Length: 416
Ligand SMILES: NC(=O)c1ccc[n+]([C@@H]2O[C@H](COP(=O)([O-])OP(=O)(O)OC[C@H]3O[C@@H](n4cnc5c(N)ncnc54)[C@H](OP(=O)(O)O)[C@@H]3O)[C@@H](O)[C@H]2O)c1
Image (cartoon, rainbow, N blue to C red; front, side, top):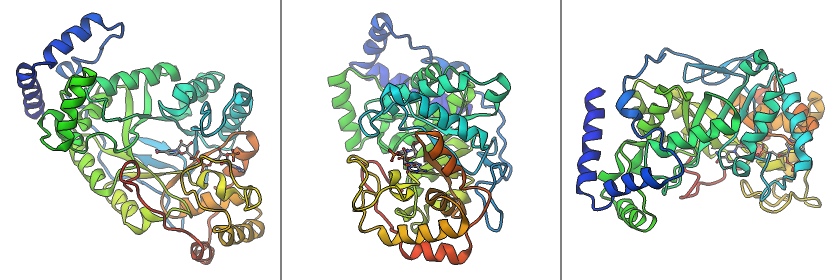
């Protein structure tokens, strides 16, 4: 491991010497930037990976277990989480979710109500509300005692745009910024937000990438004055764990092939890939039919299901006469198309005495994923927390799936 890291560093140094730009760029950035680059040398001082627990553990709730808030799923064999999480994208986001400061009290009550029901796992990202989602979590979390804070599991994400090339410092500085906004010293889970980085960056130093991506990189480097990465994305994630900035690491929107590559690259550093966060709901079953969920589990990777309520469409609140606001782009079906599914969901919700949203979320849990359900207020959080404490029967699952949708991938964002 040490040898390969030295090799990696040597290649970066050789590249730097050959490059007409990079050495000068690094030096001038260090001299002129108002922003410190605290992690540039981190790999020189902390390449000794710690021992990571690679023994077997539970990645999902499997039949016939009835999921409750106390049922524990292990992320990467290191963190226990409940089978349901709260997604915090809408907190602070104006463009899609219409956030205003007046919504703060309701969002805090969603946070508090979730915790009251044992839902202690929260998902955010540096891009949600340009950091406002992380700041909101800090406000709500800080109102809790130290003991309560210690029980909360916070996940965030690195906006992995191809322009953020300089690994590990771009990733580690972004993680450091997230921690500052969250007012925390260590994250529980840090995820690559999407496979929008150069694909070979997963395990290769970008400077060796002789593909079309590399050509684009050279153009970007020249135009944007960027410096080359000195390690792969997997190494940057491993550095984040070794530096104690996050307990586990994950990816999002990765195809199974990409998950396998990241998993293998992290294993070389003694680290287990904890999770793959993908869109999964009754309106998007592709991760199931394509084998991504099964393949992730075989590698010990938990699946976190985003937009499990199809951005509100599976709550029973919206209809053809009352469609959701524009801009909710995931599983953006016309409401008339999904009316048969909603009818079936309403029938099961009534017979079970649960909310419609709880039926949608329980289905996700039964299928082996952890739903990240967004909630804007206490009522929504309470209804969503009804997803645990019971289990759909096989007959109910078949009935729902008769009216479900498969969905599709996108070349840019959704590879799974
Ligand atoms: N990695 C990625 O690329 C990615 C992408 C998307 C999301 N995510 C994550 O996944 C999380 C959840 O996804 P999401 O926010 O897109 O959508 P979602 O969970 O499918 O839907 C959440 C929205 O549905 C409505 N809602 C929720 N519970 C309700 C209830 N009980 N009754 C009525 N309405 C209810 C609320 O909006 P209204 O009240 O306004 O209708 C809420 O904001 C996000 O917060 C984020 O953490 C990740």
